[in-house]
Each structure stands twice: as structure tokens, then as C-alpha cells.
Image (cartoon, rainbow, N blue to C red; front, side, top):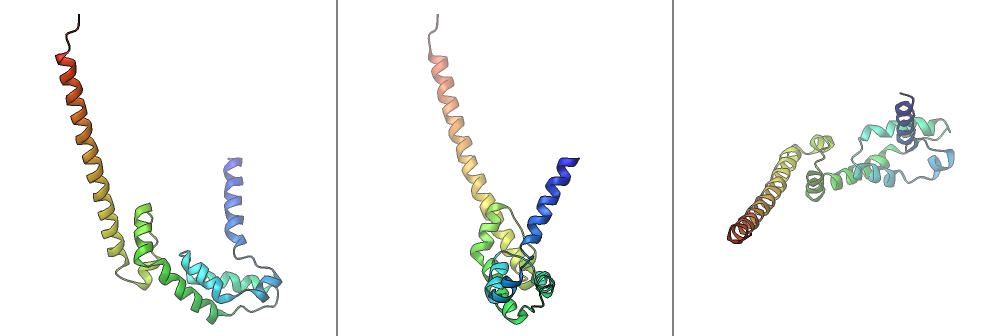
Amino acid sequence: MKFSFIIASVIFLCSCSHYDLGREECQSISWETRGLEDGESGLVLENFEKYRISCQQHQVTPNKVLYENGYNAGIKLYCSDTNIEELARKGGFNPICKKIDNLFLEKFSNRRIKILEEQISALTGEVSNLRGQLSSAEARANACTCP
């Protein structure tokens, strides 16, 4: 029980640290770049509020317009066909893309089905090959004149 609490605490602290910015970082950060990075990572746009709260503690106001510009560019990359294929290959699904592209789920599902069909085909071929090897081994065993 204690161990699971420690693990949960570490995960929570790590997830918060991305948004916990110091005064210098709040003042010097490129909000457009941060938005781009968050978008490319598939994070939600609403996370900007966490940056705002963190920087507000240092009397710094983050530039939401620049952040949103970067975020919009990043989320387009995250939701690109190439990345959808990678997400499908890994079996992951992030509903964030569905918000900006109603075809995302269909694209994701179709790619995932195609990948699974390819895997089934490869495994079917492997099973067929192994059956052939087994038949050959049985034929050799039956032909063997053992004492």
C-alpha cells in the first residue's frame, strides 16, 4: 500500500513539473514553441491554464495567442496521417484528434485494421510453414527403420 502511494506521488509530481515554471522560464519561454511541443505531444489546449497559473505566481502573463498558434501547428502534426499510422501501430488512441478532425477515428480504425490484417497474414504464413515442417518431420520419422 505504501509503495503504491509513493509511485502515485512520483507520477503526480512528474506530471506537474512540466507546468511548474519558474520566474525566468515564464519570462523567457517561447510560448509558440511550447504550444507546438504540447500539440505535437497530443496534449490538450486547456493545459495552457496550468502555465498561466504557474506564471501568475511570478507576476508574469504568458502569451496565449502565441501558445495557441504553436499548439494548432503541433496538433496538426500529431493528428497527421503519418502519426495516426504510428499510433495505430502501437495500439494507442488519443481522442484529441477527433476534436479537430471528424475523420480521425475512421482513419485510425482503418489503419489499425490494415496493420492487424497484415499481422494475421504473416502469422498465417508462419503457421503454414510450420505445418509443412511438421509434415516433413513426420514423414522422415515414419520412413525411419528404427530397431
